[in-house]
View (tube, protein in one colour):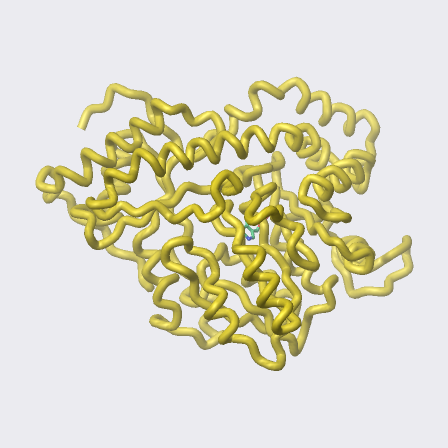
Length: 395
Ligand SMILES: *Cc1c(COP(=O)(O)O)cnc(C)c1O
């Protein structure tokens, strides 16, 4: 099918960098001139500014979000013999982080409409060994802080937020990173706040967690050549911190843009509910920072997800699937003993979800274009019957 309009990428980072390009270059150059590449001035500044933006007292920069989870749990005193509850439908790094801390992961199902951890299922999974729960603020929407605080209060659980997709997200008056003992963030380039490479941070209210984390990321040495912990080398590069420091002041604007885009999608897509296209529910109004905008292509849809994705792509609209296989069905983690059918909602979502283009700068006309094409594709299935649907993912 021919297509006269420009392509719509899934994500476009150049748009957010263009207006601040000279500031970014200047920040990078100033680190190069100073030469303080490791634990330099820009790192300390960014740690303080980012923690403050999250409503947390301390920020400790690390090499990536996965390390923020793995080392962060350790810094909270969690390890071997402890059970940690987390959702089955998250990016696999959440699970890897728990395993690396030495703790035992306990997966639970999610809510079908929000795709967030099902806190009722989480409560049922609590045992005498449960020490912590990891709410993953998936797609940019926080897990309900009030319900989390209730649960943790009733069962004496530590809350460790995976906020890798939820920089500055808000819900019920709380900001991501400020609910629990500690929270992990990622600065992978395509995250809401992204570096020009890998990066991550743990934020915490607890001075002791901060102190241990600073040691763990730096070979376990609270001071040079004196090692009190079995640590590693995982620091946020000063260069990356300088880049992130330039971008941070713009984040509220970018997030606001994402939220507006989400709202417009929601409005325009409401007419496609009868066609089986159901957006993931936003229960946090303007506090949702839409790292991703995800719809469910349900059985009521006259066209299956895989064909829909192919046809969208043929019309210049790039989409993604986050994520095609839940953690408990990943080959690497079969040894944990989970099987198909254990988490029906997570498994169903994996078959249905489709992430639409979402990034600051995506224009209203582009959003209309995406929805128009979706409308066309879901209302004229007869035209598409020649398509061979590709095989479904397992699970
Ligand atoms: C990106 C991400 C991580 C891992 O962050 P990295 O910086 O890539 O290591 C962890 N959890 C979630 C939910 C993520 O989206």
